[in-house]
Length: 586
Image (tube, rainbow, N blue to C red; front, top):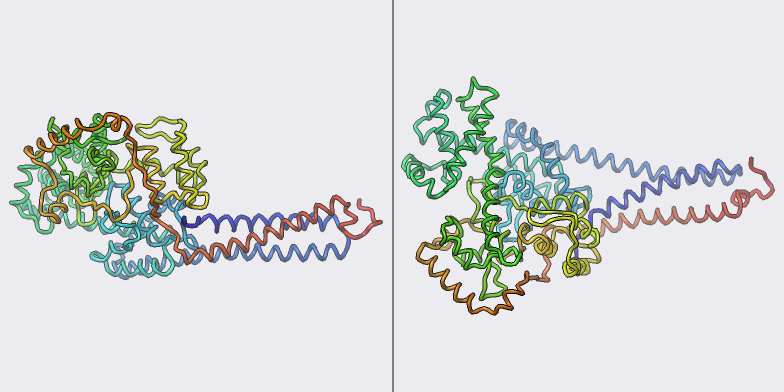
């Protein structure tokens, strides 16, 4: 079954407030109309009762608000005690910005009592925030093929800030995190990234023999420092152990390893020029260079994503029948014909979840999965890798913003999606009947509504936008290893060389020639009925939500009963209602 909607608590509160307001007005008006002492007494008692209920509701709201403020301030105090006042100040300065960025997705996620997120929801929200904001796949937050609830998001701090992990874990384990506390988590993470920037920059000066000139280096020396810093980041070199020989070899091969290095270098120089223009008199100071590199880190993922878009455009030239898939033989053929990419071995592609093997004799590369795969991540630090930014994020965000709940009726989703364009899908459009039927089938599995953060809806979005939204695999069936990680784990290269690449192209070409033409022409996207909710409300909270809703529904029923009685009395005349048959009312 689906995770219960957090709208139940909000709905019950709104219904309760509406009933309070409506019944109070009704009671007052009837008291004005009636002059019977008994009627006025009864109606006044009703007003007093309803006023008490409304006051209790308002009081509860204010108590929750005060409690949340105390909670997040207490968290900041704990972080200051554990990490120092500098880290607290750095984190606190970013909290509001993160709150604003997270709010639309937060509103659409299942929430615990008191508007708090469970562990898997916190991890999911943080990953999406950093991936959309910077293209960062953060260690411990990004799913590498496992379920979102397979580990706590606080594991990120285990090796870097153990006391911070304890502070967050205590709250997460006992009651979940509020939006603001989740924003504090994100801001604390970014402050650690800032410290790594400082350490990496110090190492860059050291490896270039300029460690004694950090604040007195000349312009050309600072440019060389920034270029070397960026090269080390792009190639994933360990700044803590790198030596001059390693850096020298890297410079000799950078354009072979990373053919777009020249464009990257040019962009880095432009960002530096922009930053130092604010204080040109300190353009070569260490602190200014830190600001330059922080600005580069903020923007690099978005800038580098243009390469991902170019990669997608290249693959679409080989796409088969608008399916968002490229036959593997054509994928390798592009490499044979001069592309420096598309050389990954079949075994590696399959482990990444990039291959569609629903027709084993005709494997194909899923464009959206390949673009968003780990093989296209680079610029690794000890905290994150910079990867392509999912185009599906730009499609999910409007849906979440309009629905503002964890689930929705299929008709509402169809209405929104038919008006939602992508880079390759025009809108407005009419969705195929078969696709609408799929959505209704998902709703049937979940009591009439479609969970937005489950595998089946992600699969439906892949069918609706096959070139933008990745096909979602069941957790544990794929492993998102970078090329370097794959070699470390398996002891073999992730890519074909020129000789094995030609052999692979020839083999798949022969298999394709033997394929049935009708089968190729009728190629359709695979569909699996297996559900998996990425973020679900823990079962222990269901009773609380239902009991709270039941209490408010009882109040609404009481309101309805009183309204009916009042209408009947009005129909029989005010005198009958007030119990004074012969009295005139003027």
